[in-house]
Image (tube, rainbow, N blue to C red):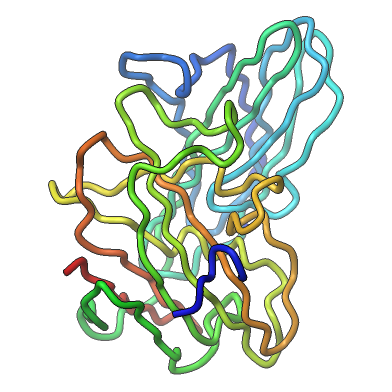
Amino acid sequence: MKNIRHSVVLVAVVALVTLAAPSLASTAGAVTVPTRHLTASGGTIKWAVAVHNAKRCTWSSVPKVAGFDGTVTCTSGRAVRPATFKTNTSSVAKDYTLTVVIRGVITRVDHLKVVQAAGKGTTTGKPTTYCIGPSSCSYVLPAPDDFGLASLEIGYVDSNGSCPDPGVCEQPAGDQLDVMIMAMTAGSSGMSDPGAEVGNFALILSDGSQARTDSITCDNSVQYALCGLGPEGAGATFGAEIFFDVPIGTNWTTVNFRYSSGGNTEVFVFRHP
């Protein structure tokens, strides 16, 4: 594999107000993140946070929620941001993490978790192990998936790396930052939003748990951060990275990619050697 790193969701409206939740990035103990639930048909959430003596608010989502991410001016009072979720057609529930970074005299980071119920999609076959590392794994999909992806090459997972934008990564105390590096190729219709794929990837750890995707994955300042990428044309091949918060010293075992096309899903696995 080439050196990719260097060369390469309307139905109900729910109003939510969350006050200053502790920052995952700066709190050493366990943090309870507010959670809201949606049906498979989706809907719009209005997330409001209290701000005081702020200058700007930067909103982001993992996986990426169309129209949510962005930076706006905010001062004191309440800052409100709507997030609209599309229908979930897959047979697997989807988890989203919404984040706002409030910058002013001090910087505060708030989070909101959104869980969307599974749809009526069907699963074809059992999870499939495609290949075993350490070399890269390439896979041409049976047909472009629901987001336009035609083929995928998983390069490797770089463990215990540095935050590419210091101070922005969540990386809770006691966690290291692992990054999965890959190449993606768009199908004949291109990919209008490559970042929509981020929820289809999972990094499975040695204890069977799933690593949490760090919000830096959607930071436009990071060159290859997946859900910060813009549209890609037909047949375009491009590099992408996903950042994960992993307990220090914990190894990963597999990278799972959930392929979904026309309501059918299948899981492909890249296994650690």
